[in-house]
Length: 391
Ligand code: TRH
Image 1 (cartoon, rainbow, N blue to C red):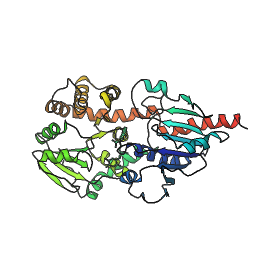
Image 2: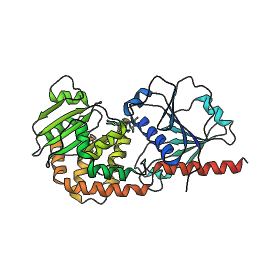
Image 3: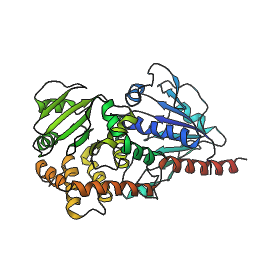
């Protein structure tokens, strides 16, 4: 059934890094392309946006990109008529004047706070909960992405599996050649590394350098670069450079656009990812992965990590389960874990089982449902109720 065509305003305040805009952009594109919605995306940091989507101009107030009306969100917010559905991404505060305009609309817009993804059990209980505004006649709903059908599901395009299968079937050699890199040798392990600063990094690089088979690691430019340079004993590193230490070859890449980054995840044998969006993309890549959770105060992210690990390792035999958990936990600085050399050796010994599991996990992920479609249904149901209440 075709969804009702509605207007949407998505507000994205870039707090840190690329996850906020990465997710908001994926959602905006999906709403337009797959659900025929009319979308305005308000972004307060077009520079961060341009990093993941290089055609974005940073010096204009409005631009159409992939059918999305991309608007610069300035502190001085000019009056605009609110859309029928308003998404505040990750609890960003809507401009006061916009909120007031929302409150005098009849019917009022459907107002949704899109929350961060977590595999923790409380997510399902809170998904869809209303919160009336203390002063204005408005209600905000909390929409929680998640890994089970009773949550908001996960971001994924309808044709994602099909595109990935076609790429894996015939696109991988061309992908490496386009980056000016050789096609992998039969016993070589290709790894992508996207990470925050991490005290566990030198141990991991040492383990790779000491591996009995070749390990090639690709690092898009970012926060981990100074630590890599220090490990290499040099003062700086730039995209295009390559180094060899023992079995390890390191390639520094430019930061890729969001779609090319997907190809990287599909082309590698193992992906180190971080935060939220790259974590989900790595799961959809059906390749083994190691997740670095976004560090939070008092190590609150450890609960998030354990919650995902619990889901993710379901169905793995105990040795493979220990190998995955050990590497993830060590990478996230958790206590009572073996040293990195031991964790890496355990992972290597279980690699084949972990690879099979990554494919099975990807097939299971679909059970949670796709976030964009669930959000459209949620908004559509609320809109229908409002139309009937305000004939
Ligand atoms: O950049 P992040 O660390 O973003 C984080 C998280 O979302 C975290 O949960 C949030 O609280 C914090 O920001 C504020 O990691 P994340 O979520 O993986 O986002 C990275 C985005 O960058 C994702 O959309 C993929 C994209 N990307 C590229 O487009 N090209 C690249 O080369 C790489 C490495 C990533």
